[in-house]
Length: 350
Ligand code: ADP
Ligand code: ZN
Image (cartoon, rainbow, N blue to C red):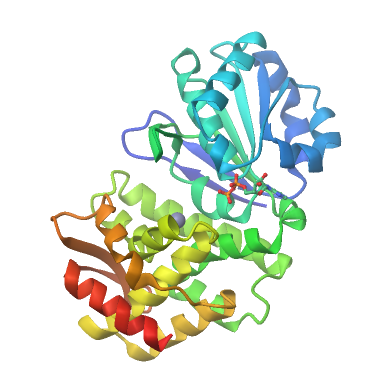
């Protein structure tokens, strides 16, 4: 069991993140007397409920189940959940338990931040991606008017329970998706990079269980040092500018796969523009290619979509956070034409 205490500047309370096994059969039942005294609801999605119904029902708390899928991360689901919370007579002292992947965490966190101007939220992330990424930092949101995460709030969970037993039911694609952010963290942390490079089977569940706490610690340290995304936290955007452009265009690829593709392109850009450690960047590319079986995409044809990135500071310029040396990143600004040209040339060599 590993425990992390996170306190973000400007937020009233600290968040506790606990990495431990068998959360549904041990940690949550242990908390039940307190949860029942204050009032609580379990919020999950239809896939997770189908897989874990017996253990969820055994908690004997009210349960609200949303249909699975990012397309339901919207106001209809949010207000249906808020209604279920009201019907369960939740009070200021009550707790929402968000049990699921990033979608459940986002909608559940937002509902907890709105209900009675904010009640306590326990996040139980059930995907690899949600454990290493969205469970740290307190961001919550729904998609609105066709824009991802347009309506949201910062709401730190009081407790995050990260349990690797949930990985046992994840499809391989979801594992690959989580590995996208894990490799990104590896590009920011030399010790993690070495561990990933030395591991034969990156999808091995015991291996993943062993690296989750390290990933949480890496992200938590960055977020605590820069809660407002002014400086250091921009490193978490590594691979994401090109990755988001690919993700917007190629709907069949997951977020993590797009981040890895973005990272592949952006490390080559770093090689060509900065005083970078070429040997290291090649080792990083080799690691990425081990996760992505087929690293082919025509990124150049999606380059224009990178101009939409909120992190850009000037019109017709693209700002990239790129890896340069072991554990080091740099910010690089390129004119749009040059960026598009680079993607075209790099694409031919992949
Ligand atoms: P993320 O953004 O964390 O990848 P999503 O909420 O989009 O998460 O979940 C991805 C998919 O995986 C959804 O269909 C969800 O229902 C499903 N899912 C979540 N947790 C598990 C699990 N432990 N086992 C199997 N499927 C899961
Ligand atoms: Zn990401």
